[in-house]
Image 1 (cartoon, rainbow, N blue to C red):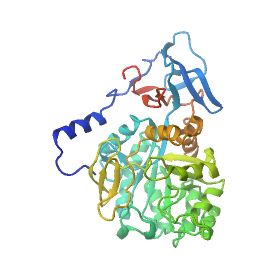
Image 2: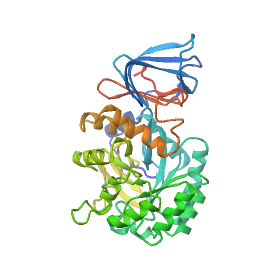
Image 3: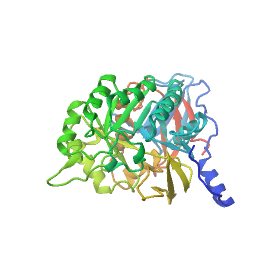
Image 4: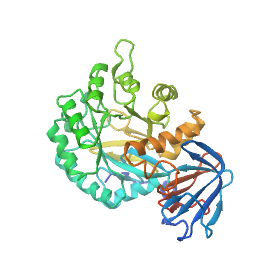
Length: 412
């Protein structure tokens, strides 16, 4: 498990505890089996925003009509959004999805739920193949329990030229046999594998993943434009944190960024924390890909929702200062401390994106990638009662998951 090292003074410990403490310690039924009407809010739907709209919760689902015995909660002046969906997340709350115990992983999941992420894919980092296979088995149990939506393997099949916060000694070419081994170890819960597809075996591994129904994501890559096009034609459908850990866009050598932005089959991940991307880069991605092809992610590590300090990311030591995570040795950015409520607020207040576009990038698009849009990703009747309540300033006030309040807006 990755935990802060060294002693903290009592004031810092108290502040950390306060940040990590949920508004409602244990999820409780939103309605006590009595249907609930959330009324008066700006309700963001796939077709647009309903002013003074309402959402009806009946059990674990969103209902189309309000039963006579429903009780009403007034959310006048607030925003109601579908729960956020994070397809790339390494941990939070001081816990690592790569190395923590099952209890640690659950702590990290809960930390992100407190910030609006009602569906989460657990991401690993580069490690020994035997270790990653064992890790896949542990995470598969949590997927079977419904705690996570799947497993994302980021590494070891990535380029040493663009390794970022991954241990170079443990990197390896994407041999299809190795890729198959990890997918099999996940017992049907492998959601995505990030590959440097220009490496030996990369294209064959993309085809393997596509055949198995697993997302092949291009990332931590040193590929050329032409090599990236080849990988897309082979079945790759996601760009792992576009712009980061890949060659920059060039006028004679456009590299992977141009290929990934121009192809309508690709969904591009963006880390909107103000550190990983300049606002102009984010605008470039939205302009060329369009809102329907962007998925905001956290790429969070243990410090998300926890605090500054020393952590371990796989075998590498990370220093988090002022909320920015960097490797102690070399200074590379090492994931983020982002939560998706912060990514949303930045999108609409700093980047000036329409609220509807931000919701699409945070909920609908990742839900569609996971093949779960029939259950999550919007506030349509029949779907799971996963939703986020924000105040007029876009600060989080409530989180509901499957009809239970994780953060109760009535309790503050």
